Image: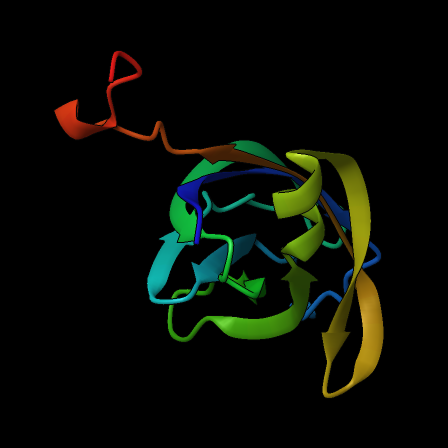
Length: 136
């Protein structure tokens, strides 16, 4: 099992269903990787075409199956669920990095837009113990 860090560059989303009727929605993203959760900034008034360009770092192993993104609309009372995307991580563990690409956003199993992100996996430096010396 290889451990390391997963760097997620959250770029933007488009075609999202606007949940606010009077104003543009204020979307943000909750990123979850196993038990680790991080939250993007709120794209105030960005509506269905938000841009974030934010980077998030997760500690992972190559057995971490996926990254889950939950898009929400920030409201004063209750935040509204906009949609979600699940990104399989197997390819980034094999390739090391994936350039910015779009992934479908779904809500109740229906397509409701897309989200763009890039992924980079950096394996942790393996520490060698004195017993591993090449000078045997």
